[in-house]
Amino acid sequence: MRDPPAPSTIGNHATRAPRELSRTLSISDVARVEPAERLRLEPCVSESSPYVEFDRVQWRTLRQSTPLVLTEEELIGLRGLGEQIDLDEVAEVYLPLARLIHLQVAARQRLFAATATFLGEKHPDRQVPFVIGVAGSVAVGKSTTARVLQALLARWDHHPRVDLVTTDGFLYPTAELMRRGILHRKGFPESYDRRKLLRFVTEVKSGTEEVGAPVYSHVSYDIVKGQYHMVRQPDILIVEGLNVLQTGPRLMVSDLFDFSIYVDARIEDIESWYVKRFLALRKTSFTDPSSHFHHYAGLSDDHAQIAAEDLWHSINLPNLVENILPTRPRATMVLRKDNDHAINRLRLRKL
Image 1 (cartoon, rainbow, N blue to C red):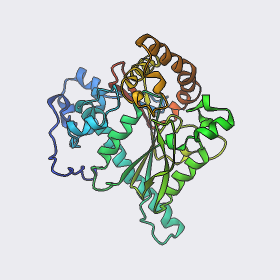
Image 2: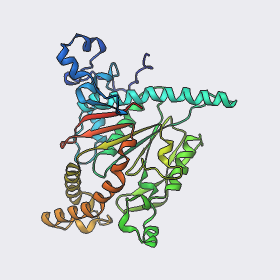
Image 3: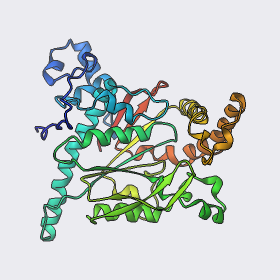
Image 4: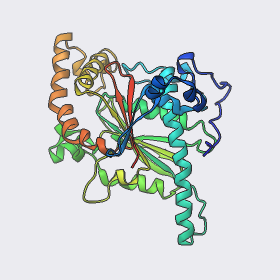
């Protein structure tokens, strides 16, 4: 099957030829390599596993002719604090992933149209938003993954409207968390208004003209009262958050996802990234007197390190082990990072 048209360029940015390191390998390229090298380019497929596993070299061959339309300047604006994602990683990891999602968007629309025709609906060709869930631990880089995907997927003419919502906005307000006695459990599943999140995604997917997502402030550490991020009939909606892949006895937001991604890494590496990010924030946003974490700004390096490690071991690590990590098998795609934040292994669900 041929791919739908490749993404267009944005504004005055011409389509960029990827660097030599990121050169696209075509099917004919793979056929010409020596048998030993060809074996390295073939993914690991086990008949007993629902997954296909790739290393980065194997995965990048699936990019085929998808052009790199993201500039270095644009990428800098998408990076999270402490992350070193470069255009090579975009070309070798994110472009094949964007191509896969692009193909699945087209296939899912045909499926929706077939169901609508069967039901005798008046407009069977109505575009149903394709919903992607992005999950993973705090500090693992899931926000950067979501932003890069949003930028790449929006370059295709078939789905230019790509919106991104984080589940932070669906946390209960601080006052409500205090009333329930669970402020210390912020970020755990029970600290979210899961019904509101489910209702929001349901309305978006049902074609509601305009749906508002609450806005969360990382400065005040609370929901911004009366402020909403308005989502207006997107082609693709990306929902990013810690616990978005959770299941339950009732309908959950994960049941509405058409594709899901889990950003993975060794727990020791995630802890290291969390502590480094905390120390960096201590010298930047924590210095704002209105910041909820302003009291950390005046700590010495040693005391700040101790505070960060305490927060990790008392809150973030238990949440990861008890709630987030167990949802990894539900993901369509698992992106595995090395200790330098680079994605070098991928696992795609085939069943």
